[in-house]
Amino acid sequence: MFPPVIATVGGGGTRLYPLTLDQPKPLVDLCDTAIIATLFRVLANQGCRRFILGSKGAENTLPLNNYFKAGEGFFKRLGINDIEEFSYQPQYDDRGSADSLRYCMNYFDVQEDMLVVSGDNVIDINLRNFIDFHREKGAVLTVALKELPAGEEVSQYGVADIGGDLRVRGFVEKPAPGREPSRMINTAFYLFSPEVRDLLAEMGDSARDIGGDLIPYLTERGYPVFGYPVKGYWIDIGTPERLLQAAMDFLAGKVEHYAFRNEYRPGQWVNPKTLNRIEKHLDSGDIELRGKVFIGRNCSIEKGVVIENSHIGHTSLIERDSKIKNSMVMSFSNIKRSSSLNRAIVGRHSIIGTRCILDADLSSGRKPGRIPVAGENVSLPPESVVGPGTRVAPLKYSYKILATGKFSQLGSDDKNIFFCEK
Image (cartoon, rainbow, N blue to C red; front, side, top):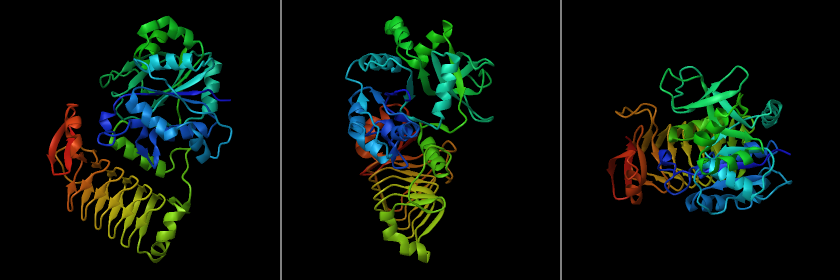
């Protein structure tokens, strides 16, 4: 039996605005599945059955409970019959991820090795090898580490100070360029031995955050903490750009333990209920699918539509002559005729008006590499042009967005606010 999984879930997810204005970050859609469910799916497919959600606050706990309930539907969709009910952290004054870990271990009487994961990462890891490594080393903690390739910025992560035997001496948080001790970063995917329960009790109120408090406590006192290099896929979904990148990576088959169903052609997946609606147009060439494409159930797609390297969520309407490229369109969206999307995200239940353009490659004075994002329940006026880095949300969220101090307003209309990162 694989160890139980404790998911520490908290935070407001402001960097993912507008997609997190009305839901917690772990429940943001990634290829028609919540981010956290995508991670759980990778773990369950390898043998994990016990999941405990250490979620903080009503804004996290209640939506997560509504999404997973006791977990029966989650396991059923994976064809797994030997199941355990999902558990949820009771309401208490949670002071951080280490505090949540301590509380959940005690409340649910966890007295074995445990996997502790973050709710906004996706990792594809061979669990059996990871667990064997941990036990062979006699580790109190094994941290999954990802080596970033040369040229990729490491200063936004916790970087491991690690020896040749893979023993971790500590982590340097967000090191200045050129000051990083390695290129091995903390993925926030941990395997703890049961003795950490006593160590957390020993730390008392000083154990609040896993990265900021618990790991330094262990490394500074010489407890065996090891790093396990991850060869497979990992991504921290902290921004819209990384969410879109994850979707494109899933379509490209870069996640070994995750697979789409209903393959229509090689690298193209179309739900049978949608295929019944559009197959004659596909056969005649009136609808073109290019590259890697996923289309969910009960979608309506009209003549002249071109979809290239994109994910279309279920129950979406895409009207004639629209072009969607390298983009993610979430469920219940309505893309009106002759609209064009390129490297963009459209949130659930949104309307993109006639002849709109959402394009990350338009010229812009804002930071390069940023993508346009229409949030949930947006109604974009006809002929709107949304360029790189521009985000759109319903006007009622204006105060919530601007009160963070992280965004600048670009404009508004009678339904929407247009904003960007400062």
